[in-house]
Image (cartoon, rainbow, N blue to C red):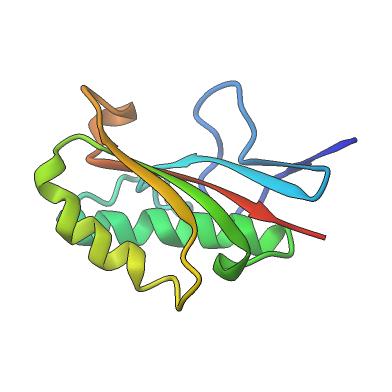
Length: 126
């Protein structure tokens, strides 16, 4: 059985997908970009601010599903420019205390709405 997770505290999907799907003790959270859920505007001041908005969107979805960053077991980070790795990593790392999840970080040719970073997560849930 699968359960669709949606919250108004994170941006609504901009395509045919769910914010997250819970199935068999796992939560699969779709990639998040720096859309402010309050006004639908992109937050692109700088890559750290952008990454913070991405992480806050992920946090809102995790919370809606009854999870948090300590539940995350795998992340995927997609960057438009690998030169942003250190700045993104600094913000990303501040959301985890220890027992960091597995992860990959890759540079891609383009991201939705021409953003600089997109992050997805997989978490364990009850």
